[in-house]
View 1 (tube, rainbow, N blue to C red):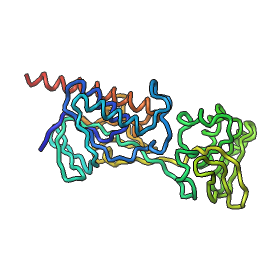
View 2 (view 1 turned 90 degrees about the horizontal axis):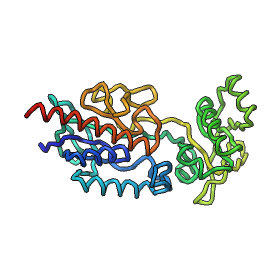
View 3 (view 1 turned 135 degrees about the vertical axis):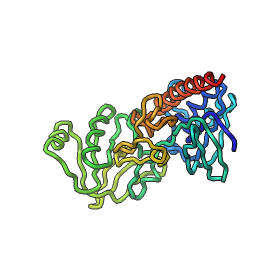
View 4 (view 1 turned 60 degrees about the vertical axis):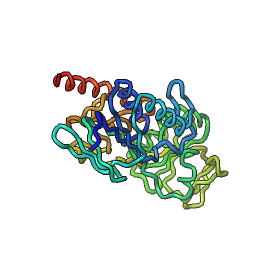
Length: 301
């Protein structure tokens, strides 16, 4: 069975960020990536110093190229299972391969829960978003909407007032509003539509309106989803990590979990979900892991 110092599950910014540092530490590293990155539909990555606006696919292409420059091996394959075997880990890959690693980094990310509404997938990344910090600037001073349960959507609507003063909350059904919720909506002049959404419409490139079940047509340039997210992988649970109520895995900034030798970084960790933060978490985990491995190596001399 082929052995590695570190197995990294997930080849997004967090996983590649860790791989780059570990490669430069002359560690034997394998990155396994199943594809379909969360931000693939986006036109550009924002808030990443020196790369603002770069298409997500190009960012990952460059990241892979840089990691490989330092000897990192990258395979386009899903990791089906990871099991602890003594002081090491054994992993089974979808292509039938098996590998062994001293440490494991899980950079498996999250999946957005996307409602079954006509047009929502067509405009996902081109008018339908989940992160105001990633796409708020591009839609500044435009009519915006937030789709989701009232308690989540109102919080995001208040945040979006930083970019626009024309905000409507769409609850896609009856909203369980408190008196405080109603006061907030009234005070900040945030609209509310409880009628279910029939479809989203536009010109095929840009979103322009929301059509409701009662036939009302509401002009909107962008809709921000607050419909929830779920873990992309159950590997953290299987490896004994604690998964929080929101689906993230309990982990320190450098990725350490209560399961020794298992590190979780990126969107699956309980922190801000930004590309810049994901990459930083990956780098922090790499530094931590290299230090641990070095101590183990020196103890054997």
